[in-house]
Length: 162
Image (cartoon, rainbow, N blue to C red; front, side):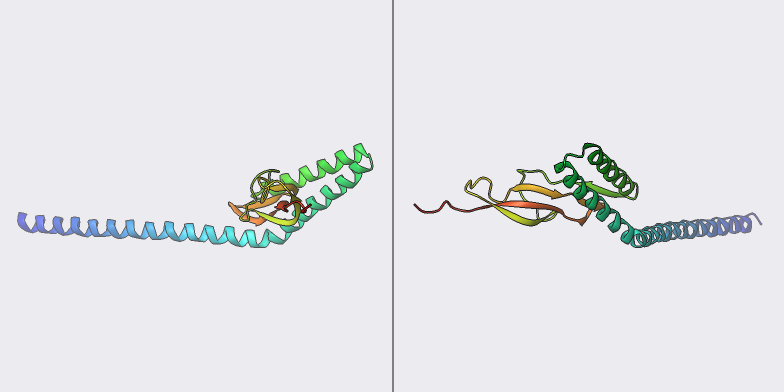
């Protein structure tokens, strides 16, 4: 009888070990599916927000342009107001995971993050391919560029022959 009891206990232990392995496998599958579901939800939320985020970027660009015009006309208070509006829009974008970045004048042109909107001639070969002017900032979401920074790039032009 003791032998039968040991066989029954060994069988139960074996079944429990199998159930434990199955449970562990199922938990891993559930965790993976949960992660995939969260990623899909986040991607869908980004797709839904994308048009609004594009409009916010355009709004910031428009107010930057207005600021430039007002600064040239000497309207200090209105210029400050434009800066505040751009800052508020930038904070809204930041809260939605949109990171603003700026091109540096004098840095080498990087086509992975920048788009040339013009060239400026230079007789200095060291400036060739470098940024002459930063026009608009770029934007990233999750490390991916969603809008390139707009820049003017120096282009070497040899001096005219005498």
